[in-house]
Each structure stands twice: as C-alpha cells, then as structure tokens.
Length: 245
Image (cartoon, rainbow, N blue to C red; front, side, top):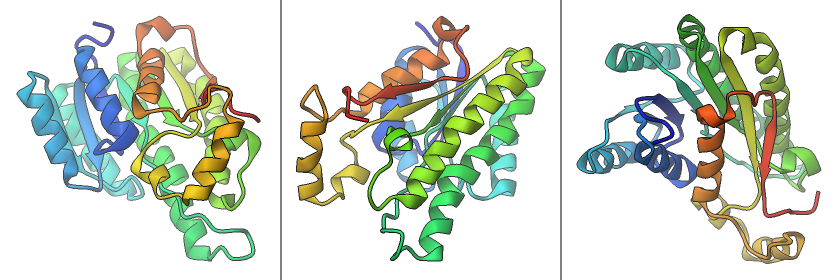
C-alpha cells in the first residue's frame, strides 16, 4: 500500500473530489482526518470505519484561523502526527467583474486562499518537527488560462500556484514537499450547478472529449502525497484531459 500508516488530513472531504480522495487514501493504507463544514463528513467516516479503515471527522471552517489551529492540535493528539495535508476545500461564487459584489469576492478569497494559508501554516510546524511532510493544494486549470466570470476564483487558484512554489523553497530543507493540482472540468456537485450550455461548450475544448471524475484528481493527489514523489516539489500538475489553454 502506497500510504501505509500515513496520517492524511483532507479538507472539504465530505463530497466530490475530497470524498474520492479520502476513499482512495484509505484503500492505500492511510489514516484519515476529514474536515468539512458539512455534517456529511460523519457519514463518510462511518463508511470508512465499516470497511476497516481508521478515520475521524471534524466540522471545521478553514476560514477560521483559531478553529483550524485547535482542530490540528486535536488531530495530532489523536494520531500522533500529520504526514499529509490535502488542501482541497473550495467554493465558487461566479460573476463578471462589473457585477461581482465585494462579498462574493471576499467569500471566495476567504475559503480558497486564506483557508489554504490557515491550514498549511497550522500543519507545517508539525511536519517540520517530523522532518517529513506532503502538502498538496487544489489549484485549477483556469489559473493558467483564465475563465469568464471567475475573477475571484481564478485569483485564488493562480495564487495557490505561487504559494506552492514559495513553500517548496521554504520547507524543503525540513523534508517537506509542496505541490498543487490543477483540475479541469470534473463531474462534482459544484460543476453540476453550472448552466447546461456552459457544460456543453466545454467539451470541444477537451481533446479527450469528456469530463473527468473525482477519482482522476484523487489519483493525482495520491501520487504527490506518496513516497514515489519524494523528489517532486514546487510543481502544479494539470489534470484536465488536455484542455485548451
């Protein structure tokens, strides 16, 4: 098993990509710390336990620095260490620039960017002490090519790439790698909420002619979190079916 006995903290793990990642990691031997603002995380953890895996759930808002720090301390007390951080939690509040409200901007920045900062800053000292860690964050292929009506979302996902490169430089000497993944169109509740016309228009831009599934991204997270990627740091792995950039 590729993550045997590793302790993995996954944010936004109650559904979609986070859920697929929790299930994939558990099958590979990881012990799961699941965070989400949805109580649905309890159901995920119960299913994992029934399958013989070790997992705990905590309702956490990654935007709340104090809440994050307390939850990290509790997770460490429970498992003794934290080896992997998957910064997966994210939201969208799409609007064109001229129509976007300050709240729509602030809300997306708070979850997608400040939330990643909060979680990484809280976990990194533990990884430093261990002289081992894997930090993998969710960017997006729109960070590279832009996307109509997503000023706030694209800003956060572009920033994730930059922060990842900084963390690779700062934390590498402590045995910590930092990478990110840039998904393309993936079938999740978030993308299912997009207008049907937008979804149809996306297919011609994807050479493989289909959208991805959450497991495609979970597999990318798995690689970057594993010891197979021990010499990989500071990269953004794009998983988007070859979508036009």
